[in-house]
Image (cartoon, rainbow, N blue to C red; front, side, top):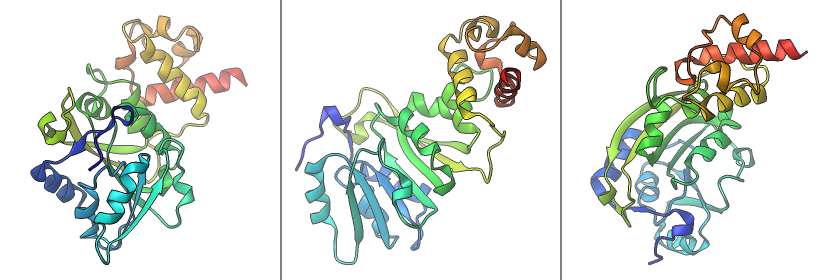
Amino acid sequence: MPRARKRFGQHFLHDKNIIDKIIRAIDPREDDQLVEIGPGQGALTFPLLKQCKHLTAVELDRDLIPLLQKKAGAGEELEIVNADILKFELDSLSGGPFRIVGNLPYNISTPLMFHLLDSIEKIQDMHFMVQKEVARRIVAEVSTRNYGRLSVMIQNYCDCQYLFDVAPASFTPPPRVDSAVIRMTPYPKPIVGIKDFQVFSEIVQAAFAQRRKTITNSLKSVVDNEIIKTCAIDARLRAENLSLQDYANLARAKTKWTL
C-alpha cells in the first residue's frame, strides 16, 4: 500500500462515518458527471462509483494509479488522468456540467479554487474537504474577522456553504489542523458583473494584503483617492468592511478613469 507523501500534501481519509457523511452531502445520481481531484487510495472514489456510472479522477501521484485501477470493480467505469490539477483544464473533458469533489491538499486549495473559476460555466457544484481556516474564509460575511480575498472572489461566482467539521484523526497520517467540508454551487451568472477581472482582482488583492490599514492607505498604489470618493466609500474603512459590490464599483470606476 503506497504511503502518504509529504511533497504531495497527502492525508488519506479513512473514517467511514465521515466518508458516508460526505457521500450523503454530494448525493450523487446515476448520470452525474463526476470529477474527483486527488482520489488518493479511493476512500471517496469507490463509494461514489456505486451510485454513478462514470467518474474521472485526476491524480498527480503515479504510484497510486495502479492501486486505484486494481480496486475498480467490474462495471465501475473509472477514468484516471495522471495530471497536476493546477494545470489541468476542465475543457479537455467532453460533456458537462461537472460535479467536482475532492479532499484537497492544503497547499494547493486556494490556487486551485481560483483556477477552477476559469471554468466555472462547466461546473454544476463543488464539494471539497479543505483546511477549516480556509473554509471559514470562503463563507465569511463582510465585516467579520475571516472575511478576505477568498471570500470576495469566490462569493461573486458561487453560493458557498459550510457543511461540517472533520477532525485530524479521520486521516492517515493525521494533519496538524482541523478540516471542514464545504459546498460551492455556481450562480447562473455572477452577483456583480466584472468588466475587467484583472483590475478587480488587483484591487481586492491589494486591499487585503494590508488589511489593518485604511482603504486609502492599502489601495494607494492601485486606486486614486478620487476614485474612492466617486464610489461613495468611507476612506477610513478597512478591507474587511467593503462589500463585493464596493470592490466591483472600485474596479469599474478605475477602468473608466484610466480609459
